Image (cartoon, rainbow, N blue to C red; front, side, top):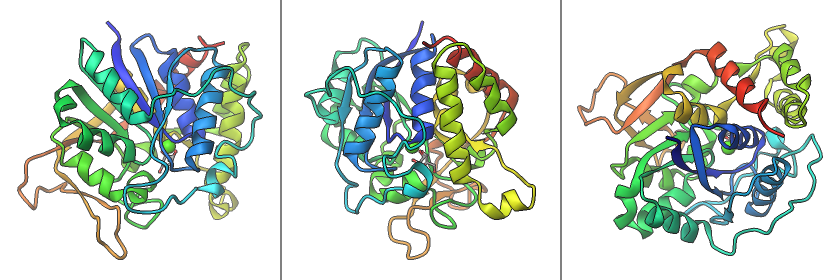
Length: 314
Ligand code: RIB
Ligand code: CA
């Protein structure tokens, strides 16, 4: 029985590969793809999502979400994803029209009409999910779980102690983590371990379909843009960090991950720590856990899952 899911993403190179994995997997039934503003403007992330779905020859509704975070401004990550939000490979124009429904309208309709509960997999800022929870509290019990890429128990990437997806819209993340909906948090603690190394890019480049080589091209660009020069100089070359793919992989094969059930609160006012996911690892506050936080991954099994699924695509 495949799991009904809604993806909410901000493509973004890793989002694009996450979409591919989700659409390839027999374990998931992707009912809807909604788009957030994060890695780039909503116009660019929406176009990128449509291009990826078209490239795969799949028919899934793509609906555009909020044009900006709840209270703050979009901060496109041009350094990582380029001006288009998906620089590197050239993808053909989409072959279908954007949904006439907003992300909020489409998400609510999918939840309302689904016979079974739906898993939401956000891989960008949580603006659209927060709006859904705020506008339709009556639909909360139709959400099976929110499996998100975001945050970190230790460290950060946009600030020393804050990860991009959370920090771009901390107020949205606060709504999500206070919602009571079961959460799996794929933060940097696990996604920085979910690396694919340049020699492994070649596995995808050598695939005889057209999607494998596209994945390799996406990894080429994404890896170059996320490996600090000092790391490459020192010969300590990190692989490409498969941030968003972790969230989809958890939804397919949670057994690949090690998690801890912990309490997580969001810093929405910090001068230096805005957007920090304050993960109470030692239960100092004594508050009840509200998230399954991922800390480790079977990297080889993760890579094999991606290979097995990407190879089934066009
Ligand atoms: O911090 C990594 C996250 O920020 C990923 O979702 C990436 O796509 C960017 O959105
Ligand atoms: Ca993303």
